[in-house]
Image (cartoon, rainbow, N blue to C red; front, side, top):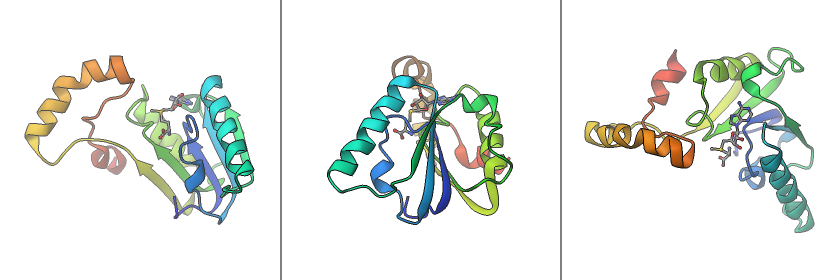
Length: 153
Ligand SMILES: C[S@@+](CC[C@H](N)C(=O)[O-])C[C@H]1O[C@@H](n2cnc3c(N)ncnc32)[C@H](O)[C@@H]1O
């Protein structure tokens, strides 16, 4: 998160786990999630950080939206940084999500991803694929995806 700066958007902010780690160079953070429950927790977290004087970015806009429908309120290249942690492994349409992330990112900006994906060891990948159906049911996410290949497309 130390790489973030300027106008930054986070896809699927969840409970706001990343809020304490944004750089002070972020001018405004747009934190998107479709879940009211998640956004409420993220807002509470931001308030707690503020109360403790541990706030990194004091301009946070929480937006409730399904980013797979696109975020038409933001023009192409609106953001300097696009952040995603652990959402590509739980989305039902990775291609649309990556396209929207690319659309929103300014030329020369950063798309910062942190995902748990496929291993370099084939045996581990066999195990991850074997577990995928169960993981999807229990955690809402899978761990066998090759993100390097996905991003390269
Ligand atoms: C696995 S959680 C990751 C949360 C957080 N980024 C983290 O690292 O802990 C995925 C989050 O993305 C949100 N999400 C999934 N699909 C979404 C969509 N299409 N539009 C908006 N939010 C979505 C979920 O509500 C959830 O909060």
